Image (tube, rainbow, N blue to C red; front, top):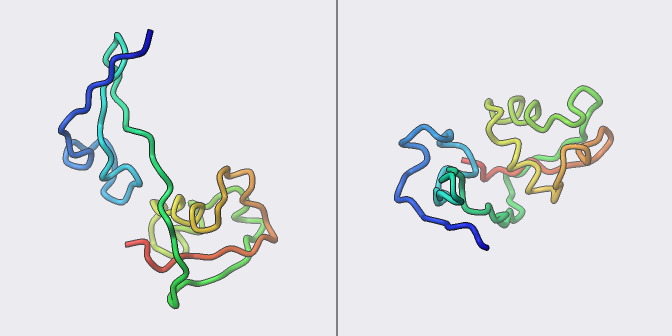
Length: 109
């Protein structure tokens, strides 16, 4: 039997479910199952085209597996770690290895 899913008309940021910088900031909030669990609809990766403002760097050993640290260093917040991962088609932090050349997209804000 399939779980019952109900879409809610909730702005995730106004209810402080997520930060305004989160990839889920504009997501649809849903309740599902017998226990009415609260979650988001599945996130779909956005396209991140090359831009003249993009920067490129090499992952150093101190930031290996830590895209949040590069996000803090380049954007001033840890919130854009997922933008770095998406721009480089990296699906898991264990793929975020030192020595890898990566793109830091300019269009994060």
